[in-house]
Length: 496
Ligand code: MEZ
Image 1: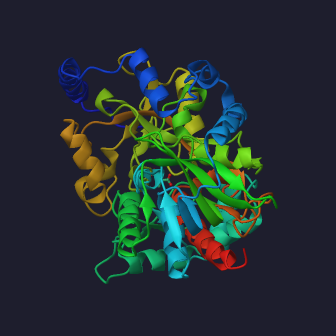
Image 2 (image 1 turned 120 degrees about the vertical axis):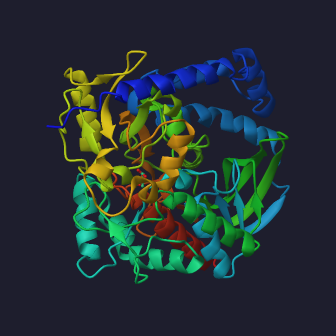
């Protein structure tokens, strides 16, 4: 049972609420629905708002949504083929990487190192990716009291024994080298006074194996990878989406049709191997949930792969991050990194009870929040939504090394900019759609089973985490499977 909350807490909350009201009053005009449709039609001539009604936010079509989307776009794909002459080649490369996040960049770096002519094509800009959003850290069993076997057991159990063993094995065995690689590329991991990397616990981990760059680990990793891609002179075609894979008469992947999002022009990339590294699908807002994902996370890779004939795995399994902010409302929808629970924050219901261990796995913590709310122990926020307190002031009360500002500086600063002092005001949270556990099915080597020379890396691939992912294993997965795809693609293109 907790000590009662400070009496002035509601005062602080009222103050930030007033600031928000002021800001909203000066908010710029938003596009009307007609204006939005006109814009979409300009860039996607085949756009048909009625076809999209099926997957509208809140339609609660549940976890079948990606399949519905894929089936729907299967028919429009024929239109693209009619419009584009695929014999007119605009780009001719050995390895085409679709996606400019952590997986795509790691892949391109390794392929380039191995001597392949590699090109990245990305719908937004390089680094606009969920890699940026993973704040808390990256896991690797590289300390004396730990081992990849222990890491394997944590992942396999945490993922409800549903992961593909050969994928988990690659993930954990190559994790220590992934950290070394990132460190050598220039990632500034947290270190102690003797220069040794500091590791902490994350949800569901039996050992302290979370390597972090404060609370901006993903951004630090992405910054480093992006610099490396640029320094190596790897061509990056930005604001260009791959809309269709091209296969040759043997059924092997042979390139992709690309769409320039700014001009609406199509182009053709011929490639000997193709890597799908397009990330997740959080922006599909399955079941009407808010999401922690970046704007580009719209299931693109799943659709590309599915339309070309690759199988999907565990599309019925989505991860909800337990701590999406719902109050104060300036930060509505923002991800509150799991790192805050690693360093002492607790989940507390309306009765002031810390009802769960904060470092339980994400599925347990997320369903715990929903249970507390549905059984009448939720904290009501203005507007009537319910959540539970994320008691960040506990970070300093529970002790440990360093102040909140030092341990989670990025989040602390961001909240301060909104007038919220995390040392004093607990935040109200509710689960937010965070990660697709499923994706395109891959073999232990990262290839799709059905389409020769097509690889998948990162969140677009399914089966690595089973039906629940542990914190810090996504940053790990993008590096391990991204690097693997780059090496495999580069080894393969010479035979094609
Ligand atoms: O692995 C993640 O999803 C992650 C590190 C997120 C976070 O809470 O920071």
